[in-house]
Length: 508
Image: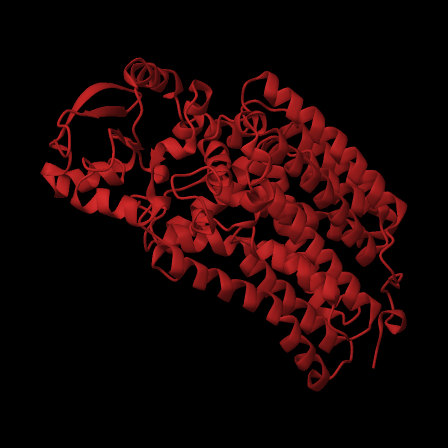
C-alpha cells in the first residue's frame, strides 16, 4: 500500500502533535490581532450590538438562572456546546453583562483557526507563502474579525472545523490507517457547536476516504475504519435529536421561529444568487474571484493526481454552504452571517492553489493579498456583518419600557418570548432583572399553560414584540385567542415592545 512518503510530490507529514514554527507564529499574531479588534469594537459600542450575541449569553445564563433551572434550559434550537462552555462564567454578572468570557473563547478560537489553516496548507503544499496567505486572508477579514470580538458562536465553529480538517489531513498524509481518535473527538465538539459542522464533517470524511483509496489502500480496509470513525458524529447527532425530542417535543427544530420569505422558499436560482452575493459582500469581489479559480484548480489537481488527493479534505469546508442552501429553500430570511464560513473556505482554497505554484508562490501571494486588502480592510466599519449587527435600532426606545416597568414593579413573573426578545432580557439585566424573573418558552409546562390557557393565574406582567416578523409567539397566539390578555391592560410601549400589567387579582 502507498503511504505519504512513497507518493511523489507529496510532503511527508511528521508524526506526533508538534507543529512547525510558522503556524504557531501565525496563530500568535492572529490572537494579537483578535485582541486588538475586540478592544476596537468595544470602544465603538458594537460588542453586543448583534441581537444573537445577547441571546447566546441569555441561553447560557438561563441553564442555572431560571424559574425552572436544569438541563432542559439548554434548549434545542441552537446546538449546546457554546452555551455549556459559558454556563458557569455568565452566572457572574460582570461576565454576563459584558460577554467578556465568551469573547475570550472567540478570540482563542480565531487564533486556533488561523493556526490550523496555516498548518493544513503547509502540510499539503510545503509552501510557507501559501500557508501564510490562507491564514492572513482568513484572519484579517473585517467580518470575521468582528465576529471574534463578540460572544457569537461562529468563531468556535471556525476553530473546531479547521482543526478537524487539519487532523484528518495529517492522518491521511501519515499513511497509518487507524481510527484518528483526536480527530474523532474534535468532530464531536464541532458537531455540537453549529449546524454547518454537520455537512463539513460529511464532506471531510468522504474526501479523506477517497484520498485513502486513491493512494492505494483497498476499500476493504478503508471502509471498516470509517465505519468506526463515523460513530463519533453519528452518536453525537443522534444524542442531540433525542435530547431535542425530550425537551421541546420535536426531533429537530427546523421552523416556527421565522416568517418565511417567499422570494427564497423553493426558489433554487434565487437562493444560489443570494448565497453568492452574500459571499461577495463579506469577502469582496477579488477574494470571491480568486476563490472560485482556486477551488476549480485544486479540485482538478486533487482528482487527477493520487498524490495530491488529500487536498480535497480542506475543500470540505465549502460544504458549509449546505446550511444557507437548505435554510433559504425552506423560506428562512436571508442572513449575511450564514455565508461567512464560505469566506474561510475560500481563503483556504486560495492558499492551497498558491502553494501549488512553488517558486512563484511568494510573488502570487503578495499580489493576491494586495488586491484583497485594497478592497476589504480589516477594520472596515461598513463591513456587511457590522451592518447586520446594527439592524436592531430599538435599544433606546425599549429602555423607556424598562424604565416604565421599574417604576411599577413590585414583584411577580414577567411573561416574555425568549425566541423574539431574548436580547431584550439581556438588556434588562442592567436594570436588575434576572432570567428567573421571566416566564419563557424554556420553562416548559408552565409556559405551555400560560400560552394555551392564559397567563393571568401565573404572571403579573406580559411583554410582547408586536412588529418584527408579524409579532412574537404571544402576539400571534393573542390573534388566535383574543381573550388571552383580557385580564391585562397595556401600560406602556416603545421600540416595538409593549408592556401589559394584570388588572384582575386572580384567586380573590
